[in-house]
Structure formats: C-alpha cells, structure tokens
Length: 349
Ligand code: TXA
Ligand code: MG
Picture 1 (tube, rainbow, N blue to C red):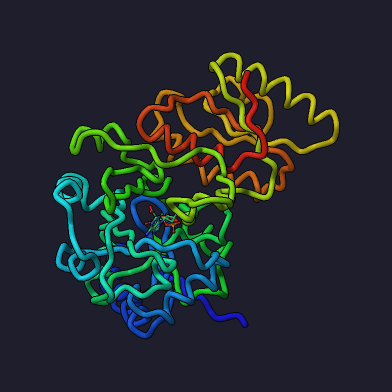
Picture 2: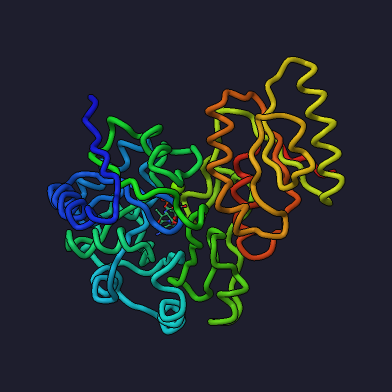
C-alpha cells in the first residue's frame, strides 16, 4: 500500500505555509520527514501510539529500538520526564538546543511504543529552526528517528529520504543538506553514573568539562544480541550501503598506499571499486571517488560521510575502500564509530 509523499521545498518566502501544512499532518497522526542540524528525521506525534507505529512501519524498524523525542521548550520536556537530575540540567543549559540527546526517566504520558517498553525516554531539543517551528506549531513533542530504512546510512538530504521512504510517509520538508551530517550524541542520565551510549557531534570530553567523568557505554562494533544492551539500537547493523565497505585504519601515508594497492587488485579482478578518501593524492585513480574532507578537519568528514556512502552506492560500485586515517578527536570519534559499524572488515595497516 503506497501513499503519495508530498515534497515541500523550502524557499525564503514559503516557510510559514509549509510549517502550517505539516503541523496539520502531524496533528492528524501522519509522518513528516524533517531537517534537523544533524540528519533528517522521520517525525510523528510522540504521544500518539498509532502515529508512532507509522514511523516503525515506514522504516522497517525493530519494535524494541526506541525513538528520540524532540521538544522545543523545557515545559515540554517536563511533561515527558519524571525528574531532571542537576547534571542533566547543566548539560541542557550548555548544549540545548543542539545535538545532545538525554536519556531520562519517563512519565506515563509517553507511550510504550515510543520507548520500546523501557522506563526511560530519549529527548533532545534540535537547533534547526524548521524542526523547532514544527514542534511549536503542531503543539506536539515529535518522535523522530533518522529518516532512513532501518540499517541504511542516515539521510543528510531530502533526496536520500525519498530514495528510502517515498510512498511510505506523508511528506518531507526539503531544506537542503543538513549541517552536521552525523547523529546526536546520546547520553544516559537516568542512572547513577552518566554514560555516553552513542558518540556524536558533542564529544565525551566536551561533556566531561561540564559534568565531570562519564562512562563510555558504547562499542564501535555491532554488539552481540545476547545479554543486556544499554541502548537497544547498538545491537543492530547500521549505516550500511549495499556495497561492501572495507575500512583502512593506520597512519595516513600507509593507508593511502594500501588503498592504491587494493584498488588495483580488486579492479583487476573485475570489481567496480569506489573510494572514500581524505587526500587529494588519490584523485587521479578513479572517478568513483568521494572526497570526505581534510584528514585534520573531522567536521568536514562528518558532513560528507553518509552522503559519500550513499553516492557511491548510487553509482553501483561493489566495493568501497574507506580511508580511516582522519583525526579521531572531537566528532572524529563519531565518524569512526559509524564507519566501523558500516564496514564488513577493518584492515589495520
Ligand atoms: O541526531 C539524531 O539523534 C537524529 C535526529 C533525527 O534527531 N535521530 C536519530 O534517531 O539518530 P535514531 O532513532 O536513529 O537513533 C536513536 C538512538 C538509537 O540508537 C536508540 O536505540 C537510542 O537512541 N535510544 C532511544 N531511546 C533510548 C532509551 N530510552 N534508552 C537507550 N537508548 C535509547
Ligand atoms: Mg538511525
């Protein structure tokens, strides 16, 4: 059963009209893909179980993987959570609105389907003006996971949202490329000790400067399905394009040499090879190449990562050789986490 997905392209003078129409869709229990500062999200009324179910259905998302609820004010947050511990409040004061998601104890108004049955809820206040206006105008907190088919790279353009979800959602607001390119940092503030469950744009170091020591509660590798997983999303394959990704880690020069060698080897055996690189030295090798950004500029690399994975897929390459030799400082840790999870194999050189 396919539906007509409306595409609202933002221009300087139609924003209020778009927000009004999309707010109506949200109020009717529909789904709208929206830009945020990180990636596009697939939004619906977080307090309406039927609307939230439409998100799970459109994405093919496992029911035990909870959603992030997006708010536009502290009053809205207070309806969703039973307490805001002092350290959580400090993080909110410094980083909201922005790419930091807090896990807090939930109140009863948050339906089970939104939290995957957990007694906690993930909440963030997005910095993007369009996202904020839609929350305000609809009067609803918005559940919004990344707007991709489950398991695929998160979308950073409306084109990629439509590639995955056209015919499955009511609308998409096309506001161009997202600024950051990787998802928010997720931190669990519901227990004794704060724990980072997903690295993102805001680094653990930045968080520690505000609230002191935090645990690192994530791994860069897909966690085994056995045992208790703190963040249900961690146990699923993620960020994977159709092509096989091989990630090369090590010093920059050695990685470049290895990419040249493996490119020649696979091409000679008939594979179509795409490259995700951080050095212009490789530009002459092939056109099936995406420049991620300078190796010392992790913010550039973050912005181009999912775009790069998807664009090589669109060209029909079989294998993607990914350069993992950029700095892992700051948002570099999040980029490395996403790349490792997208990879079939990590090759240390
Ligand atoms: O930047 C972002 O965070 C984007 C934009 C759209 O806001 N959203 C996003 O949502 O990345 P999603 O659903 O793709 O990722 C949410 C992550 C998942 O790994 C999920 O398991 C975890 O947050 N999560 C949600 N609620 C949780 C909870 N109560 N406890 C632990 N982990 C939770
Ligand atoms: Mg996601």
